[in-house]
Image 1: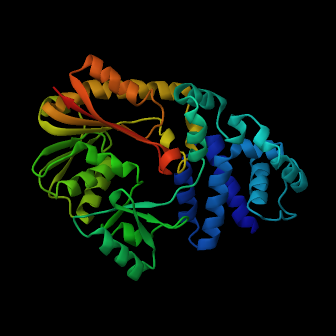
Image 2: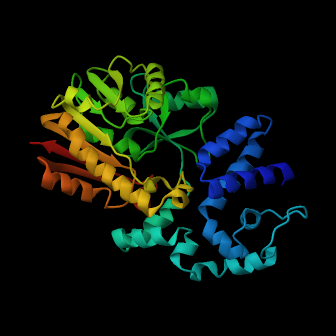
Image 3: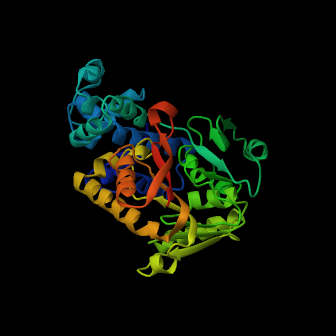
Length: 392
């Protein structure tokens, strides 16, 4: 262990827990500011930061302290390090931490699985007995999954290219023909991401766009496109033939989507548009297919974003549910009669998922034709929900 790296990790954790900074962004900023840190240095910092945030309450129990230096000490002991004399903290000693580790399994679920009490109670209320397995799965690290861009290559060619050019081993994923998985703990360099042959996209996320069943030549609207992961997948499914309008309220995200579309050779079919008050009237009953990849709690992504569980509040969740209802009531006006809608979230909560769909069926003019629930416990992927409906 090196003093500078240990201090840097603690500072990033402090900024996430006490200042509400997004962990990914804080970590990326630290790495950018310290280009001399080697691969092993960055790995030590990243593992410390993510695991302390992930296991915050469990570590608090082990070290009998809520202070960040103490949490780091408990995590380093779990990682197999011997604590150096220069790391000072107030809390249980190394021997005491080892002793208390045997007691952790007897603690309430919210402590041993490290989640806020209110969120644990909500998960149990909504998912019942299934919450135990889902929560345990959401605390496990996941692999990096890639979507092969079939506008530029094939899965077999992508595997060969990654191995020969970058010495990266990628494996096909059963049941998902254009999905590759990297070995645990591995990722791809920026040069691979900039090439356009593959995109980083969780396997569960890749199961959503195909539910639209888009055909070449159709008019598709992606209403909450963001930086365009599912937009690019739609373009590949349509062989770049047809018209896809990618919409978002943030122009910056759409600019990134345009850059990605150029790299992916998908710019022929993709247009971008910032959503304005006139957007719905402009495209009223125009789209053959409509994707609403809705804003949500993001609880299905805790594998990759463990800080989210400490930033989310009950009030925020309530506002998110209201936004979901509003989007389903308004954006669906852009779908033509007989058109196909896919509503999706990256949440595991039924109140954000099937409950929202049931309201649309009751209050709107839609019928449910297909439902996809991606369970982290069952698949090891991030948690997703998607429902395909047809407008009468």
